[in-house]
Structures are given as C-alpha cells and as structure tokens.
Length: 383
Ligand code: GLA
Image (cartoon, rainbow, N blue to C red):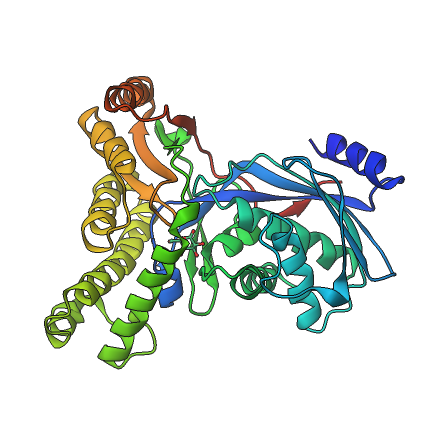
C-alpha cells in the first residue's frame, strides 16, 4: 500500500514524498469509558492502517488529499487554522498541525496524501489513526523528537479543541504506542504503559471483530453527556476523577450519592470497569486466557445496563455469540453502534460467525462485517 500512496502523492503534487508513514486503528479488549476518568484501558492495534505520504513545505501552505473521500486537494494556510472551523475529514490532519504549532513546534507547512483501510464509523478509531499518522510524519520530518505518548496527547488536543469531540486519550495512545503481538495496558492518568503478550492463535483461540455497520457518528452528544455525568459523580464524591474511587469503597460511594440514580449507574460502571481491566491483566499474566471471557461479558452487561450505551445490534452479537459457544463477547469503543468483539475457540469461529449472520438477517439488520483480529504494530515509518 505504501508504494501506491507514494505514487499517488507524486501524481498530485508533482514530486515524490519525503516519506510514508502508517498508523493503525484499534480494538479495545477491556476498559471502556474509563479513559476520561483517569482509569485503565487495554486496547490493541489492528492490521488496518491510515497511511500518509508527506513532504515538508517552508511557505506556510498545508495541502491535504485523501484517497477515501471525493474531491480534490484542499489548500490551507497553517497560520490561519481555526479550531472548530472545519466539519470535514480535513479537520483531523489540520487539527494536528494546529496542535503542534500551538505547542510551539515550528511546522511551516506540508503536502499530505492519505489513504486508510480502517473502517470509518465502526468504533475502530479511524480518526485517531489519521491524526497519529500525520503527527508521526511531521515529528520525523521536522525532527521534533516527541515520543509516542506525547504525540498521542497532541492528537487528543487536536480532536478535543480543533475538531470539537470530547474524547479521552485511549485511541491516540493505542495507535501511537501499541506493539505487535501485545495488548497495551495503559494507565490513562500518567500514560504509564505495560505491553502484555496477547497471542491467542498460539493457544487455539481467536478474537473476532464484528462491525454491526451501525454508524455511531450521531453519538457525540451522548458521549459528552456520559462524560459530564462521570465528572459530576467525581465532584459529588470529592475526588479528582472516578479512578480515585477504589473498588472496595464502591458500596460506600454509591450510598453517598443518595438517590441520583443516573450518576450512581455511571459511577458503578467506571469503578467496576477499572477493576475488570486489572482482573484481565492478572489473568493474562498468569496464563489463564480463557478465564477472561466472563470478565468481557460482565463488561458488556455494565455498558448495557449501567452506562446505557449499547444498542440492539451490539446486544444481538453478544447474545448470539455466547449462545453459540463463544468464551466471551462485548461491545468495544464508544458505543451506540460500531463493533463488538468475540473471544472464541478457533474451532468454533465458523459456527459463531454463521449464527451471528443468521441472527442479523432474521432481525432485519444490515449484514455485519466479521474479521479475526491479531494484535498488530503501532504507528511507524514505512518508506
Ligand atoms: C471512544 C473515545 C475513547 C474512549 C472510548 C470509550 O473511542 O475516543 O477516548 O472514551 O470511546 O472507551
């Protein structure tokens, strides 16, 4: 793919690029809606990537083109980039240039051509992949010397302030920092990381990603509401973030919240979810991989019943997969559509896939896209 992207760059801009970079989408194994509560997450990188061919410019011009969107080259000036002025795909790469310059890095322009295989709107972090690939390319070309976690912070700022989406830090860090064959145990408070070996094939298992094809773009308002509810919970409990409520203090905390049922549900999800991440880490580290299945299922129930961000299609994947012998299943990502993950014995994959497809057809839902995911590499230079 990098050759084709470089060739297209040359057609568009009249000379070959200085380099080509790739950054992956992600799935989250466990730890949902914990990242903006300073909690724990555990994503891994997908083999699907956003690829960027990039050259520097010294004249303050930023030219952007995407293979995935109709339309020609978009030309902007780096000193005229304005937060929330752009509702198109170009807001992601422009936002990164804006965030780098805001942080004092002398980025004086660029020609960029992008092409992505990360499915958009599927809850697999296609936007984070776009942001991170541009950030890494500019970091290399302008010799900024920023580390993966620093690029992730800048990309999050681009998305929060420039694009205007109140997301946490998980997706950008996953895209920037994941390693092949590993899941990333990330503490979102200080971005400390531990790479946990996650080789299901060696143990006769698979992890399926089931993209329900329900696009979640309408969900931003709901995402923001959940985030605000969590912040309210933390304020009522007198802590900086819900991360500071220990699992064994949960009952006492819920009591103190009195009859604010909605905040109680949100707090219960976040505190139990942090505990599930730690549980999954300890199971994987002690070689009890199959035992993570029920923890994933408990995570789904919590997102469905307490956090209330599932949807009929996601519930149908989980229920059908479990009824067909899956070891575990849950929705993954922001919710309200997007994808679910299914942990299964390799021998059961075909039957589970068929059951899910049949259940979707019977319910009159759009056919899902199912693929097996193996932890891939994080962002890197490819040419
Ligand atoms: C989206 C956001 C992340 C995270 C997840 C939910 O993917 O971008 O920051 O909050 O939802 O875990």
